[in-house]
Length: 221
Image (cartoon, rainbow, N blue to C red):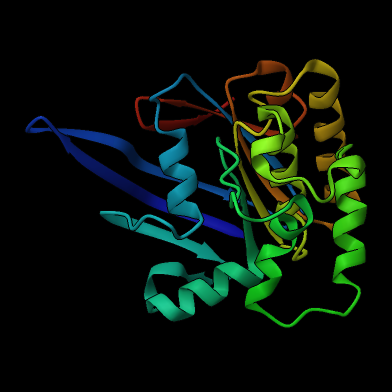
């Protein structure tokens, strides 16, 4: 369960205060798939960063399974994130010196995982249609292929929560459908909770619970 209570984050730009997130409160049940739609600059990405424990709020709380993220020190918060949460960013954020399979397996370097983790990584890479790119470096992949590597990486440590920021932004229509199908499969088979930020109404409408972000304010649809 994710509970967000009166979450606020303000940035100062050119001497003016801008509320990127303005007293946002909502809850996401375990295993739910939630979408947040809104225009660029509406605060969606900042909200995801706050929920994932990457950005500290000015005020308010983020509770995950009853634990207040910001009651933990940095080390405990990092360990908590690694066990519970994974991110799909608006940009692929791959390590240029690592191959596809090495990038997918990267999160497992920070914990104890089964010996067959490489086999699972290969399965995920096949699912996103990059079986022939296992040993390719990011510089040899298109933008859409890099995004698919990042999506495969998001599931390698079997997270309980996936926070996805415009996950299909630079994919072609067929690959976009495959990725959304993968999300639904992981949601249904593994019970992963999804919060998907998008400006694509068609993708947003596939979530059972939908919200809209406007000027830092979140409202249910």
